[in-house]
Amino acid sequence: MNKIFNPLRRLHFYAAFFITPLLLTLSLTGIGYLFYTNVENNIYHHEFFSDSDTKGHQSLDDAVQEIKEVYKGYEIQKISIMDEPYNNRVTIGNDDGESRYIFLDEHNQRVANQNAQYTYANVLRETHSSLMVGGSFVNYLVELAACWTIFMIISGVYLTFKSKALKKTNKKTSFLFNRRVHAILGLIIAIPIFVIVLTGLPWSAFMGKQINQFAEDHPKLGYSALKSNPPQSEDNELPWATRNKEKPTSKKDPHAEHHGASNSLIGAEGQQSIENIIVQAENKNIKKPFSIVYPADDKGVFTVSKSSNTGVTGLDVAPKEETTAYFDQYSGKLLDQVDYEDYGIVGKWFSFGIPLHEGHLFGTANKVINLLVCLTFIGGIVFGFLSWMRRKNAGSFGAPPQMKGRVPIGLIAFLIVLGIIMPLFGASLIIVAIVEYFIWRKNKKKV
Image 1 (cartoon, one colour):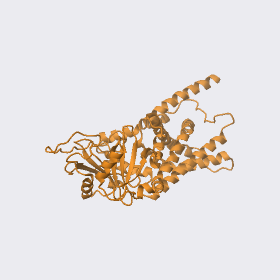
Image 2 (image 1 turned 90 degrees about the vertical axis):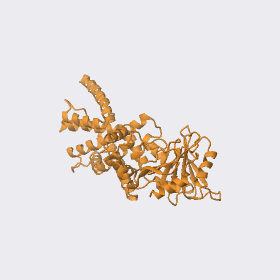
Image 3 (image 1 turned 135 degrees about the vertical axis):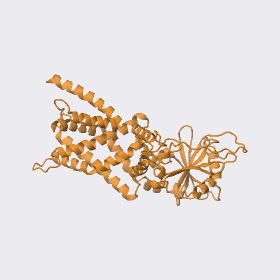
Image 4 (image 1 turned 180 degrees about the horizontal axis):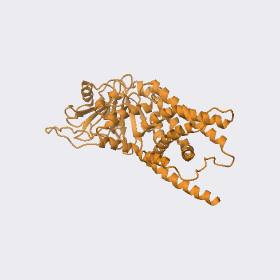
């Protein structure tokens, strides 16, 4: 047993030691994000529910044109048509990557505007996924922490059953108590944490691309429209399975004169009004809430979508209600529609998995369960830290000793399999092996 137990315990310790700060950050921001709808309903009550001081009614299309005139340099990215009692929301953005939300009351008058970057939900989400820093390195670092968490779950369960951590003893020491509690908490949350990590991987920088590519290459298991990159631009409220689906094109009226195109083609001659597109969508049984994206050019289409993972308070729907519909911008005719039933198994799994991860798949119960899992996970980290502090001698690092002799082939095979499944984990293992080799060489010279 020691040939596998010792090196696995050493790897488990190093994983816990180096990624604990990041795991605590992910857990705490995850807890904050669980309740973002509750928080935003209170702190943004004016934006979400109040009426404008401006009296009178105007059409939604007039409101959009007014926003274009008031916010020079910004383009209309999408319009979120909300169900009562929420105000509709117009998302605008400029070439510098800045986005704002413009809220409209029932008379389509402007109530307020927000800087999208600094809303509660977006700050928590950006901190959780990229530590508010962004960039590939940080995204890979967060994904690496998730991969090592999976390793810690598997190795922790093995170490718990192979050690005497769960056995009662007559010895009453703080070390044994902390180790026992650490082991018990680890077993309690092993499966829930595994599910939470697994359902978060579709958004990861590296494995997310691999999952999308696999789904695209295997239509029977996935969905041919799944692509490799998570949403980053104007379609970031589309369902996960159709965010990069190639959109059909409108049939341009040969008798109409269309004069060029902008980034968002709004109010072009012969184009349907946004209010008419709403009517067409509702006639096709697409009920509020949903988002509308304007055509990008004179061949583009109106894209109407309902998603279970929008990240917008009041806009999420149940996974089976997901749909993405494309309407001809000149005739208003429905050209194509992709519903939840059209997804492959991967698309369906993540349509459920992402809201499960975010805590809104089955209402308040989902939030409470995720909260308890996160708190238990943090508790396990704390008791693991206390156990280490009680075990290590003063002036020493307290890491489990290196195993003497060769590492068992079974352990090597296990790590290789995990490294193939999680390439970032595999790459980091190579670095660990190099470091361990130099530590071994150094210790050997001292003998």
